[in-house]
Picture (cartoon, rainbow, N blue to C red):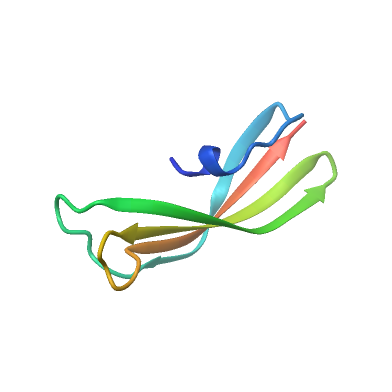
Length: 80
């Protein structure tokens, strides 16, 4: 996910793993040449033993569009 490192800065952990995606929705086509932007919302962060589990909702918006192109909850794990 290209947006995630710009949204979350996890310190004190040696590795991060993309653990998957949930609730992926493609809501509108993106016409060629369209300008898009990503918006992120932290849904949940919790410690699980020696790791951190996070869920971040990424919304990809189309400039001038009525609804987003895509919405997905990304799941990540960070390890010490």
